[in-house]
Image (cartoon, rainbow, N blue to C red; front, side, top):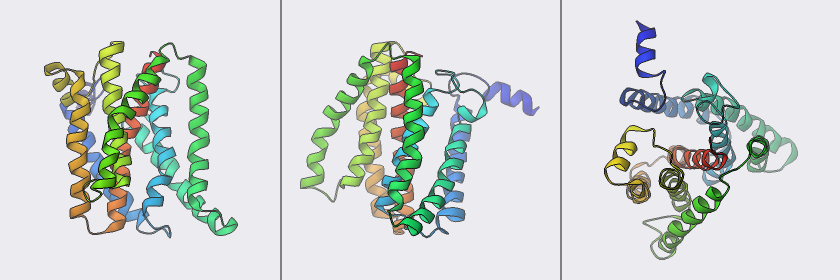
Length: 263
């Protein structure tokens, strides 16, 4: 019976409504458990520096997914597909935090630098592997990064004139989601890719791929503002910021490399 359920709802390309709901619930559970069982126990304060230290691991998750099952197929199996890849990145990131704390105490250099080293090196290795496959659609990098900059640049003014509505940290997080929206727009409209997620696929089919850019801004910006207003625990707030950043930036990086590799 369980095998039939898996075959019907999970062992297929794309994302079904059941998959989306189940993965969302698993994400909520994982967010809570990681915070309560690990982050509340470490010495490192969960502040803006911590958010910055997570960036290379988010980038690593994105490019690793583009090399994984359903994309480049360099790495296959459960650990290189959803949800396995999220578990894999978590299992690598958590020990990296602990080791970075130790190295900060031992050598004096901030743990953020060690985290960028532990996350950055495997990201560069994956980039080298992707380059070995080749970038037949190399212009995708320019289209995606250039359009992201064009869309995000005007919003930076808000951080200067109205910082209570959009802090610079939240602007950075929002820019990661703009990258995701732009990468989807470019992939679908210029390179013939199809959206696999249920709701975005419906909206793209109904309105057009351009909708992903304003959709990201109109949803993520209020979410970030609401989190700032509602969550009083600053450590929990910054952890939730990491989660929101990961949900946008990782997908944007994955889409960008997948399109550039033409897989």
